[in-house]
Length: 113
Image (cartoon, rainbow, N blue to C red):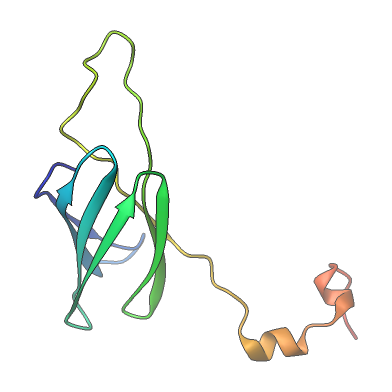
């Protein structure tokens, strides 16, 4: 993504975008992202350091967004005008009710009674 660039986020198999991410500011050490949640009509700003990840909730769905370090090949220029921004779907976590209902046996993979 280049400075000022915009990317839309869509879950696999879905037809509608859930949000839009814009690289508002950035350099080798950090990136500032503006995230527009389409359904909630909400905008948020996240500032990430290189190799840092953040968790965010968009339309009730959890995502991880990160600014990982990248390397260029030895025969290529030392710099690039692009930043790699990665968005992944968060794994669902166990609800409090599910946690309280869990037993040691089913947590270890042994069927409960």
